Length: 310
Ligand code: MN
Ligand code: MN
Image (cartoon, rainbow, N blue to C red; front, side, top):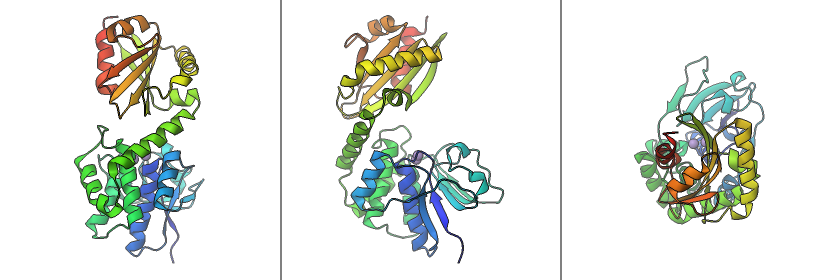
């Protein structure tokens, strides 16, 4: 009997990392590799806990250190995202959908990286390619992972293949995909609301340059237009602290309501007046942008038009 091979996703695991590991390990088991088991590199988030509980799938084993282990990596190929000491492990396969990372196993391995919306899409495709029908809970967690990573097929990373694989999994899972997507989003919002102001501002924070200005723009996804209203004072003062600490001209929080296809911008910084005049204000710090959900494609170009001459 060989060593146990653990299929594992990245640290700070998301639904795609955990569910892809479970489903890929299960596929290997069904193909006769009985010593393959799923694992995880950190605590589950609220969404993933709900998904495993909903489909009655056991939580994978938690690993803290990769030294000496046999691993298959899913959903990452960067050493910095991997289980600690991954360079002291034997990695036999990588299956993922990001840019190719810096992990360089010394031996030849199967390395499958493809620009699709979720690793779960590739795992689902592996099942179909081998004519193995995933059991109902496995089909369910794969759809959940695709919905999670693609934000219900709305993310610009979504590919044709994500749609196709999800459509083949749907009857096996017996799931109302749209209703389930709404449920996942409500869970993510509820989890966001429980976080500290620093975590909300820092979770998805990117810096942009417009002319001589350096702006920080954070984005958070919510359900309901006033989901963060009661936290506003605390979050604005956190944004101000980030602005001062990083010496930015502006810090903007983009609060996106996917159901309404709209965003509010909360703004602190020296160009608040100019931004408010250009976009029209909701109240002192907030701007409402109907039809606007993309930071990169919708908000940044409009800010460039307003602030570019400064
Ligand atoms: Mn991931
Ligand atoms: Mn992923």
